[in-house]
Length: 358
Ligand code: ATP
Figure 1 (cartoon, rainbow, N blue to C red):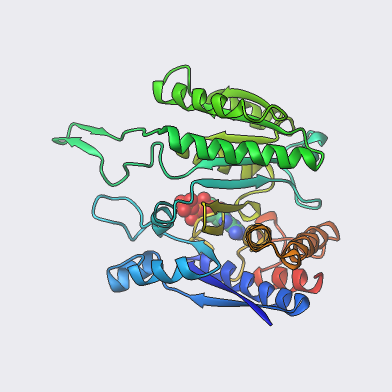
Figure 2 (spheres, helix red, strand yellow; figure 1 turned 135 degrees about the vertical axis):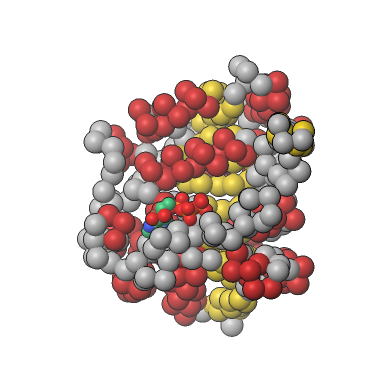
């Protein structure tokens, strides 16, 4: 029987609950496609830092890199911090180490999940935010330039190579989505009217776009995009943006489809990929069995799709569709309603219903 190794990095808080859910679903899926998903557990994150002095060991990085894919829960806790006051976030180290340059955040509402938007067109929202993840304003994190205690500076780093690869990724995604009936439109989101680094981002994006004449290309300032994502989010298809802007807009995107428990994400590099829900460790609800694992299960769908194309194995693509359908149906048939939305389905209930629908 073929096997696929998954580096399981549950991390902190509800990261542990939702990773457990994902591994149970993968076990059930594997038995249906005659394949074994073999999890390899690693301790990482804030509690690991508190107990061992290391949030992410070299040994873990090596082992994670050798696995077929990485599955991460959530990391960081507000009361455990580095000396400079920043939170423990080894997920950022993993992105840098493995060059996971494209943060892919699909935003698509599920039937049956309560929406914050009253406009019926909200049901047709279907876009993907692609966030550059290896540079931008996060590039020099940990190296803030302090002038005595009077001034702090963080630099925005935009390189040609960095913009090229993330632009190509987004443009290729636009092309693939067009083939599946979507508009095939990629919007560059920046602040090119104020910052030279952002004008450069847009210029390099436009240069790359010339090689994709079949893809519709436009650009928007991030402030206008914040407005439009509430006013008419159904207008967008693919967006590509800088690291911090993508960080902020992704949470806005999650709000459009119900909240943090519904938003999956994939961190994709040239040879490695990591999958995790867009939410954090949510210490307010950790350990109570009420975390919604849907964002994590949708991230598993992204992982299966990535593995399918990476390994050219159709069984994995079929598994992705089966899991996606099982999640969609569990909501559409109202078999689950998470605590987040005033329901009473806990983590285990949602996991069970999704497995039942496979
Ligand atoms: P961050 O690491 O981004 O600072 P956080 O742990 O503070 O994140 P968020 O992920 O931003 O929290 O989530 C905000 C709140 O949304 C949480 O405190 C929690 O109440 C709720 N929430 C987040 N994820 C889930 C989930 N999977 N299920 C249910 N509620 C969630």
